[in-house]
Structures are given as structure tokens and as C-alpha cells.
Length: 440
Image (cartoon, rainbow, N blue to C red):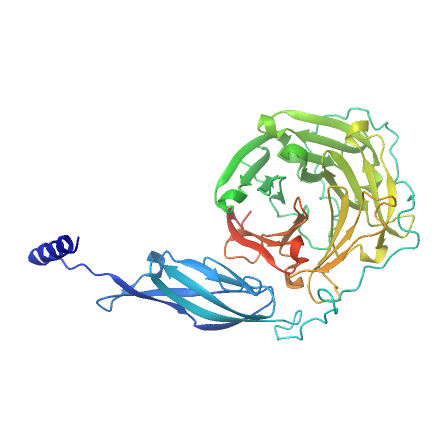
């Protein structure tokens, strides 16, 4: 083999060809300081054996962090996770280069280092438990009911009358907001679903998927649904059991009540699954959050509750959405505008994104499958910074991991960031740029 290489070199020299090779790579800057929840970008350069430089775009390096619990790195973009020091390495074949990254806590809105949040002696950073309401778990005052029986089939969704979108109960300005082109959420297999409701080329609501198995860089399918894109401002969209698409229509309904419509994943979202009126009145359209868990409809009532606390009202698919439970939760009504509410399994999750006592986003749960539903739960801090509160969508994956789908202030692509339940939401479960443009 050595003789062959020597012969090849001699031949190249005889015809005037000189082969140059990459001899070194370097990461710049070599030291960097970043705040928790803040990103910065490292660059990489290369040098050939004739001292010439290599275009950075030609260097396909592999990035790793020695302490992913301190800082994660994806394609050179470093995100601070928790205070500490880590070494970020770039590798290309046998060549190595590194930078030292120091992560500091950042005071919200100041851009300056802040003290690490006070820690409990036996757990994560201390947080203020959401204000409880007296007698959690007791039956709530039922939501306002419509006059149409819950099992009365509604009219098929039709084009919306020209009117402004319904008030969004989220304080973040991203749920069903004018100017947004759709909804982002995760499916049952942690694939990323983009439900495009506006400016679709087909004139219908569309479903676009980025697969977790490909680190969200490959499509898992692009589908045109049977639902009209004129429905964009008339309700809520969610992915339920079997990854079916659910549309909770909360205004301009034919039944006179909140309606549930679905498109089946097995048909490529071209076929109708269910179409039912529900036991909920249109008067509650702007009083909380609507979502689907499994195939059941959950109405998380945060405003104008008779109990003064956050309430959970359900309408079961088995009853064709005509009956369910009405329960007061452990969360006080004062938390209505401080974050996101969602359901995973039967548990209620309150993702508190602003006005947190810990200086970081928090996750508070209320257990649904207990003798006194939603009366007890757990409280966690996360590694996410409240500065990202208005920059995307939050959802809870199967298993309880917190997912932040960042759509604003990214490098140009929608990103997926995970805080794992197994670590009490203090460590990253992954940071990925996706194939979706943040222009969506």
C-alpha cells in the first residue's frame, strides 16, 4: 500500500498535479459566555498543508458538548442549559478542535448575569406553587350548555363569515394569531406536525410532518385534508389518537354548540372521522383552552369560572361528546394568563411561562386519574428561559417531556427543544433545527 501511494505521488508530480490535504481545524471563538436559555453560534475554520484556508461551508464537522446538561450544540449553535462550564468540540475525521463555553444565569429582561435560583435542599430550584383554590377536586359549576343536544350531528364546516378571529386565551399571541399560518404540535410518536391553515396552495387545511427519527430534517408526509382553509379563524386544531387531526370548531357552527370534527390519518386526512355537536356552548368559546387527548374533548376553563379556580370539563367520544366530567383543579384563577394549559393522558399540565418565582419557565401538573381528580400534582422548574415565552408553541409529549417548538427569533428554521420529565425538566432531551421555515 505504501508503494502504491508513493507511485501515485510520483505520477501526480510528473504531470504537475499537487495534492493538498486538510491538516487542522479551529473553532472560533475559543472561549464564550452565554446565558441560560440563550443561544450563540460558533464558527469553524480549516487549514490545508500549503497554509491555504478552507471555506467554512466545506467543513462538515460533527459537534458535541462534554456537558450537554450545561450547554447543548446543534450545527454550531450553542444553547445555555444550566450554569456551569462545558467544552464544545468539532470533529472531522481525525482532526479535533474545541471551545470552552461558560453558561451563566441571566436576569430576565436585563441581559446581565443573575444569581442562580434558590434551590431546595432535596430538589430543583424552589418555585412558588400555583395558588390553590379551596376544595380542589370537587365538582365544578358546569360550563354553559347549548340548547342543541350534544349528539346532534353538526353541519360540515363551511367557509367562515368575514370577521376577526376569536380572542385567544393564551397571553402569548401565538395561538390562532392573525398572521400565523398554522399550528405546531407533536404527534403520538413525537413527530412534529405543522397544521397549515392559511395561505395553503390547495385551499384546504394541510398537514405537514417532520419525523423525529430524522432529527426533524425529513418529511414524514404532506397531506391535503378535507377541511377548508376558510376555517382557520373558527376554532382550535389538535392531533389526537392514531395521529388523527381534530378540529374543535368554536364559532360559526351549524349545531349552535362547540363542535368536534376530525380527519383520519389512515386516509391521509382526506376522510371524515367524526362530526358531532358537543355539550359545550359557544358562549364559552373565549373562556379557556380546547384540546383533545385520545379522542376525548377537554375544555380547560380559565376565565369566568363559577368556582374561582381553573376548571376541567370533558366531553367523551364514547358519548358522542354529549357527557363528561366537571372538576375544579388545584390551580387558582389568578394563573389564567401566565402560560399554557394542555392535557396529556388524563393529566392537566400548566406550563407557566411568565411571572414565575424561579426566573425560569415552570411545569405544574394536576393528576386526572385519581379519586379526587386534579386536586394534586407536581411542580417543576425547567431549563427554558421566560424570555422565549412568546417565541413559539409548547406541548407535552407522550411520557411527559416538555417540547418547545420555537418559531420566532431562530436562525431561519423552526426548532424543537426538549426538557425531559425524567430530569425534572432541568436537562435537554435534544435541540433540533427542522426542515420547516420559520416564515411559517
